[in-house]
Length: 297
Image (cartoon, rainbow, N blue to C red; front, side):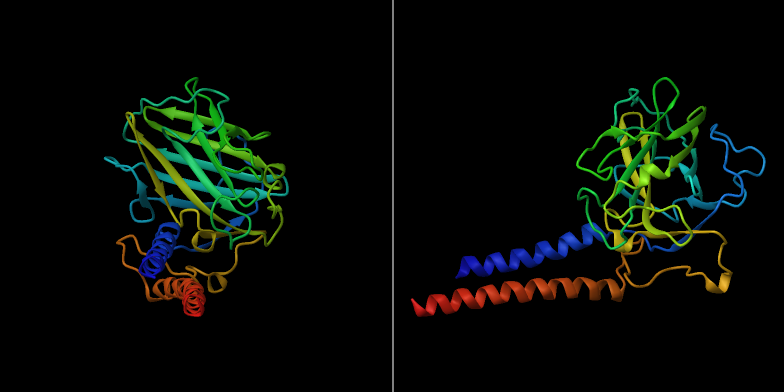
């Protein structure tokens, strides 16, 4: 009996720990990706007004959280997104203050080390974890030959991982340690998941941006919303027209998370308590069955 009670306590502690690890993030918001008036030319630079109406997301020390590693000089980054019926358009501009010794071999797939940008997309915003068919985890890097590579680190809508993403058009620039990556992801790249991402007005998905920051041979990962936790990741909606300010939702509040300082909100504590209560109920029921069984013997 003592052994079983110890198991109950350990199980409850594990449930609480798992929730906090999966949901750890800064506050998250709801953003709108506008439809492109004219598709940007994928050449690694912004020419004219081709990106003027894009959703622009600054990744700074105020809007991100270090999830692993050490950062000596923060790589201030600006992300831009557009869409049309053909697919998604991405532009990342990284002011990287440190060189890296990690180089990417061409056509090697995963691209999960060194300098680069990643985005984790959940087509179903309620999903948690990395199960096949539930998420896309794209890595965008510059290889040792100075060309862009786009790979899939986790699950490209199937059980396959670590493969180059087909049909993507990409380009880059480098200026010392600073770099840009521009890419076009055709709609075909986003329909292999259980819930496809359709290129149409009103499509919503959850997404977390990741900066891979390498200082010589050390790597850090920096995120802007929940880590493998769809319900608490930033939400993005494809729109033909950006809603008026009074129609926008600046910050969602259905699932609150630890702030960048680590302080948890009451709603997050409630969510944690709810999950622990459910686990407690199941384990308690198991305990009663075991006790009754023991009495009858």
